[in-house]
Image (cartoon, rainbow, N blue to C red):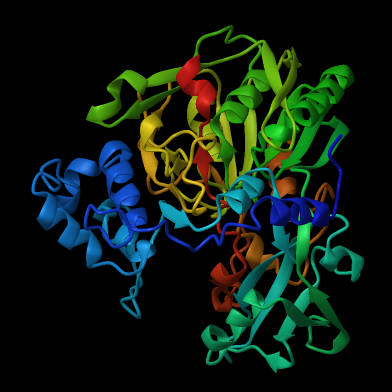
Length: 498
């Protein structure tokens, strides 16, 4: 079991392994005339794999026909990241309506693929806290409420808990005027959070420092024994991490042994992860699908041979924290689950949305909460290993640690449906942030979003309270505290070798 809270040893070992390699170093320029050969890797990898390659003029197949002109083009980018982001299609650009600043929704490049691989298994440097910013009145006062605290994280050890209200960062009391300038403090190594009452009275200042932690995505499993005469399983699942496949399967063994008749899957904090793990989870939920198609993946015209599908499974692979397969086990498939409740938010993305889309041809899936993120595309990791078409980490150029995570496929369900780029609109809308002063723990029967699902099972109509007070409340983004890779949906080599 991988319940390690602090993975400092991992970084010590990695530091020794790569001591001779500065992750930002470029290999000695060859005689080809390219000043920064990393740029050659970026262009060729994107030209081969990028989902929207034909939509980007600078990725045209003829771009490198004239070698001198190609070299001049690549030499125009001193920073490899500038080249990478210049090659992204407008399909994934996002323009801030106020500032006009351009950001990119999906594809990215990193200068340390070791940290990237760790992040896919939930190993990151973090405070272990998820916050939501809310403007709470017409005066423009802004607070954070705590959405989630990772067990044994710095936030947890400091006594911070879900539902706590924070009104200041490093002593700066938040308001609409200073929010943009102040929220950046959440990117610092150390931060002081002022915990206050609903009325702004200070309870305590908590100073926390980020450390490398490993988060178990199975945060909570619970069975409600009598909801309108039914047993209802409830699972808070925060990431599709393949190294926790066996723990996920064990949670469903618990539900199966309890004989649950309804299932509530809480994906409010789940930004995605492994596509294969998503297929495993779907297989645990749907006992009647057999080995039918769960999801179809389509690649660009250069990789149509890689297009394929994931089917519902009867067994799953078990992996260690390094992504190495260590065994397999039978999937604990539930029986008698005829519909699925999904608790969702704007943080529900990619592999989480894949669950909704992939299961809808087989059973009703009722979404409760707010509209999901809207990501129907996924990626693979590309390394500087041209002999393998940039897919083999083991043969990657040892002179640097750059890797790319570009969008390379779009995902569809059995009925060829993939039309959720704007997210899934909830069947029952519940805006958790409007209850910022009454946030209850996950699993509490009166927690506002969970209660809406339980009430629906009871046959009680959900009614969103409307009041002047609610009209004053506004949700703010907290992008500074988002994990860089948290909305990823990725596949590994096993998909290509199946």
